[in-house]
Amino acid sequence: QKEVEQNSGPLSVPEGAIASLNCTYSDRGSQSFFWYRQYSGKSPELIMSIYSNGDKEDGRFTAQLNKASQYVSLLIRDSQPSDSATYLCAVSSGNTPLVFGKGTRLSVIA
Amino acid sequence: GAGVSQSPSNKVTEKGKDVELRCDPISGHTALYWYRQSLGQGLEFLIYFQGNSAPDKSGLPSDRFSAERTGGSVSTLTIQRTQQEDSAVYLCASSRAGDFQETQYFGPGTRLLVL
Image (cartoon, rainbow over all chains, first blue to last red; front, side, top):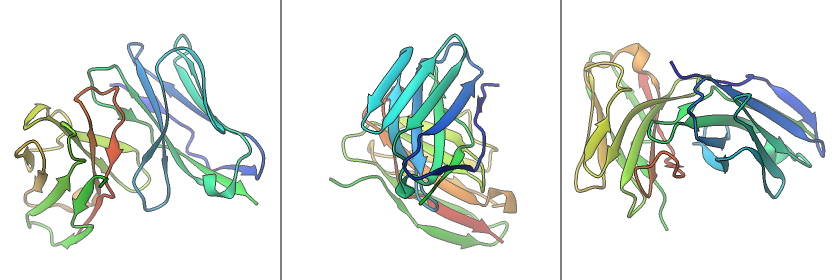
């Protein structure tokens, strides 16, 4: 059974701080890693995708992947109240469906 | 351009009734995915279409669930003899190709409540 684990939270950070969201996965053959943001009552939207070890930056968001440790993280710099949402980690081995974690709820306090 | 659309947005039904949920993917997207999200849970994969064929039906929870896709476009997810445990948000997503490395774009979902 392929599993993706996330701390459910809530993770509370003050406005302007760095939010760090973590995800571990069980399938060593995983090749593709995604972070989706889901606002309450809305559908998920893609924030970042990462496929190779290291960091990938896009604006205030940085995804970090460590395949040896089977660990992927998302950093949000200068957190804003509008970043308050549930963040879903999703993993695929390339030819198998995405496996989603249950998500981490982030609350940015103004 | 239009995104993924789903209908109905909300559905309340009685236990034992059949329901049909519809998904209209982004134009030109060949791959279509159905997921289920129960309260406080992650997304559960149900079924995937590449064109009109379904290479992977592994996530369908029981034989009460079926899906079809016609014309490489619209898909319908049918739940027969609904049970209370079927209550969830059913999400549809599409991607340009049937490669799970591609970005999937989600529709707004259908909230199903079985009484």
